[in-house]
Amino acid sequence: MSAVTKTDVLIVGAGPVGLFAVFELGLFDMKCHLIDILDRPGGQCAELYPEKPIYDIPALPSVGAQELVDRLMEQIAPFKPEFTFNRMVSGLERLEDGTFRVTTDENEVFEAKVVVIAAGGGSFQPKRPPIPGIEAFEGKSVFYSVRRMEEFRGHDLVIVGGGDSALDWTINLQPVAKSVTLVHRRPEFRAAPDSVNKMYAMQEMKQLEFLVGQVAGVKGSDGHLESATIKGPDGDIEVACTRMLPFFGLTMKLGPIAEWGLNLHENLIPVDTEKFETSVPGIFAVGDINWYPGKLKLILSGFHEVALMAQAAKKIVSPGERIVFQYTTSSTSLQKKLGVA
Amino acid sequence: MTKLTYIAFDGTRFDVEAENGSTVMENAIRNAVPGIEAECGGACACATCHVYVDEAWTEKVGEPEAMEEDMLDFAYDVRPNSRLSCQIKVRDELDGLVVSVPERQG
Image (cartoon, rainbow over all chains, first blue to last red; front, side, top):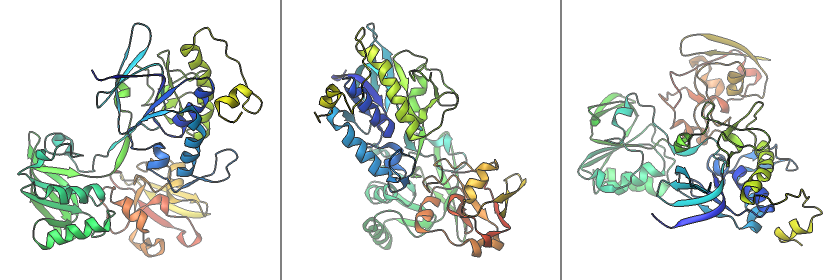
C-alpha cells in the first residue's frame, strides 16, 4: 500500500461548492484535501462553461464561471487546502476508530474523519458515442482513452472525432498501428490547427486516411471488431478495422461512489437539511449531487449547504469541543484564521 | 407569442406558444417534449438538445455558429438541418417553426 495521506476532511470534487466547503470548514480549523478527476479546480464551471457569465451569485451581478473559481481559490487560500487532481475516488472503508479510508483509481490512500461528497453531476468520464451496439466491443477492441500504445500495435485502427484527442492520437499512433483511418463528420476540426495540418500532410503521403462521415454501425463478434460502417456524403462505406478509438467528449457519471453503500435517489444522494449528512454518519453530500425535498441545483444553495455541514463535521472531527457561532465581520479569532487580523 | 411545433421521434406533435427571446430548447423543456435532454442547461456544452429544423425553415433559422458546429460533433445522426435547440432564439419571423426530435441524443 502506498503512503497514507491523512486529513480532517476529504472532499470529493473541487467544483465551486467543494471549494467553498474548504472555507466554512477552515473557519472551524479543519484541514481539507480535495480530489477531482479533472486536472484543475472548478468542476463544471471550469470544464463546461468557463467563459459563461453567472448572474445568480449574491452580490456579483455577473461573474464569469472561471472568474468565480479563481475568486473562490483566493478566498480559501488562507486555509491551505491540498489537491489531488486527475484522480477518481474508488474504494471506501471504515476503520475501527471510525476513520474513513478512501482509495483512488491510482491506488492512493487517504484517511479522514469526515468525507464530503461535492461531486456535482458526477465525475467526468468519456462519453459513449452514439453508435448502436458499441457496448459489446468496449474494453476489448473499442477504447475511449489510450493507456498503452502497445494495445494498438499492428492493428487497423479507426479514430473518430475532431478534437485534440482524436488528432493527437491519429498522429501518434500512426507509426504503431498497421493502418489509421480518421473519421470526422466535417472537414473542419476543433483541434489545434498545427495538428490538423500535420494530419493532412500525412494523408497526402498516404500514411493515413481521413474520411468525412459518421460511424453508423460496427460489426464483429465476441467483442472483436471487424469493420465499421461510415455514413458519408456519398453513402455508406465499410472500413475494415480491429481497433476503434472514439473521442466524443465527456459526460458525468456518479461512478464508484454508487458502490459506497449510501442510500441513493435516482443517482443522487439523499441528505437531511440540518447537516446535509448521508445515510452513513460522517459522510456528507453537498451541491448538485445531493437530494432533499425542495432541492434546487444552484451554486448558491450549495454554499448554504456547506455552512451547515461544517457545524456537523466539527462535532465529528473535534468531539466534545464547544462550537461557537461567530461572524467574520467582528470575530478577531476568525479574522486571524483568514490572515486579516 | 410565437407558435412552435415540435415533432417527437414517435410522431407526436407538440404545438406550443413561445415567448420571443426564449430558446427553442427552453420551450421544449417547459412543455415536456420527450427527447430533449438539455443536460448542460443551455450553455452550448453538451449537444443533448439536438433537433432537425424542418426543411422549409432552415433558411430563416440560419446556420449554426462555429461553437455550435463544434458541439454538434458530439450529437447522433447529424444532418445538414441539425441545430442545437438551445442556440435558436424565438423571434417573430420564426412564427410557425417546425422542428423534429432525433431518435436519441448523444
